[in-house]
Amino acid sequence: MAEPIPNKGLSDKLEKKRKRQGDEQTKEEAETKPAATPAAAADEPSKKKRKNQKQKQKNKLKKQSEQDVKTQERKDGIDESIGKMDGSLLCDYFAQRAKKLDKELSAVELSDLSVPGSAFLDTTSFDSPRSLEQLPAFLKNFSPKGADLSKSSTKEGTPHTLVVSAAALRAADVVRALRPFQTKESIVGKLFAKHIKLEEAKQFLQRARTGIGAGTPQRLIDLLESGTLKVDELERIVIDGSHIDTKQRGIFDMRETHLPLLKFLTRPELRERYGASKNKIQILMF
Image 1 (spheres, one colour):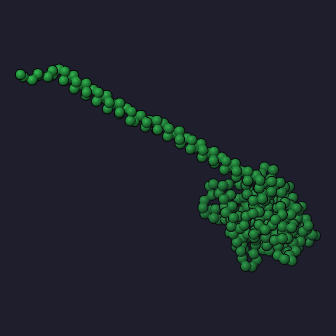
Image 2 (image 1 turned 30 degrees about the vertical axis):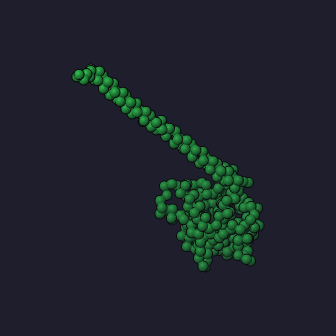
Image 3 (image 1 turned 180 degrees about the vertical axis):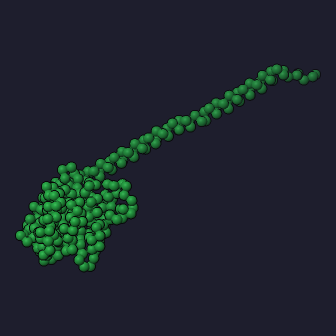
């Protein structure tokens, strides 16, 4: 008996059905497999955003912490952090402040304004507050044994000590604080601009003997350039660096005071004597 002939139409239908099911399964797999990728991609910016926010918060807390420390160190008109710096730290600090206050300074210009570490006398051992009342004691403490700060040169306008402050009003206060060192033969010089014209200051230096002069950076530069302020016998330059005004600003915080200060300190007639074995000039940070 002959075998039955398969129904060709039915076979074709079954084959098409299997093929269709296979195509649908492949399509589903294709759609399902990458489905996680967009979700992950969408979540990636979110992760970055959270990370950035966390970093911003961290930076904010750090800045706040530094500000709190700065506030604690700046109280009663005194920045206590300044007196804690030795010569090497002060060199770096001067340069950092200069760069911040004048971002256009070139490397060469910054180098010209740099004060060598050998210029500084370490005053970090002074434990008392660096208030005006303590300035006479500070000067005595860091002067050679037996030195008489109330004496002056026999030459007019030739001080042994210069005190440099940020503003004329502050310099006037310094003059009053230094009155214990004033005598008829040795006047504490007012070398600042407030109510004192440059010509008047020149005339004072031409006729008076002064052991200590108190002034502001630019006025000191002007008097030096005029030739009336002589530094032949200058022994020390005291920077009134710890003082801050009512706006929490010190001599290093303002472009109009810090840059003239550096220009004054780095004048050739002063710079060549920093660290010298003879006729040395020292910078003291008060």
